[in-house]
Image (cartoon, rainbow, N blue to C red; front, side, top):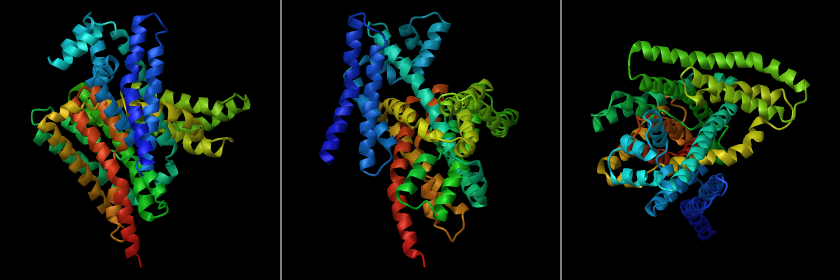
Length: 479
């Protein structure tokens, strides 16, 4: 079976790495439907994500690791063989800066790339692709996959909010809040200090953003580990899950603050207070008004007997709050998370039929892996030829682990503090989302982004086996 899984994974990698090239060549040679290369790219990415996720689950690891691995290996193999579509996809948010520069300065895409990117062999190669017959195909695939991945992040955070109960957040107690606060403050300070030492020439905003990335804790991965270990009823598990939820809320606020500071370019008490207040008011207002208004609105709509009303209203509400968050200068994922919090209990108790979580499951399976595969594609292995990049990756991983381990000190000594700290360790999809936003804002370079992805993968990979060991140890010590 292991050999079969290895063959399947290898086949998926080759398909993702080289399949788009054939489609691009066919499209540029004729006058077919321009959506054709987009369709084949989406199919191949979905195939790679499915096989990679399945393979990781078989060895007891989260599917997200397989999706990242497939994207990373496939993109670097295809880049080595000169695939034009993959070369453009690997640039990620940098391509958006190229597009903006081309429009603002009335330049061709190739000239804009030379102006935005540093002068190097890689830039010259990208410029040649953008000015070649393969350029329009590569750009169309990039634009579709990029937009789809952004929608996927909104859906993902909406689902996280749906799995989070406001009432349960209120029941976890002081211990979970203390654990969460330590788990945010410690990694943040360690991350800022580390970047200040290792990259002293970098602006303070960049150091702060790296610290913000390290504050993340993956609710989904933590919950999945405890379900797999059948330990969800333990006190430690409840504290970890409650703290992870609070951690995510604090992390979203930090993300909103840091993103605003990067955009404005100024760091002051007034600007920090204003952005923090904006984030808190938006979350509190969205949850408060939403919980008062949503039941009344949905009950009236239910009387009209609209088909698929639960699904359409749920997604529509998430998209609306995401748009409002963006309108006032916050990240769209803040609105999506708030929408999930609002609808979780009402949709569960008031409306009959399948839960909104179940209704969204097919959509999640289709588009959310696209985000993680795309994140893996943006890990440029050639950046690790730089010794400093390797040092940053190793240092970030150590800081990420230590910063969360100490959070276990926030709970009672009667509990297994080590298990609590390890349970807070995985960064998972939340850390990747923070990193992708930072890359889009231009404060996370390719090298640092690659180091962050490796840190996310290591912390996520270590959590299941370490938790299994520490929980088994605490059970043996129990009277």
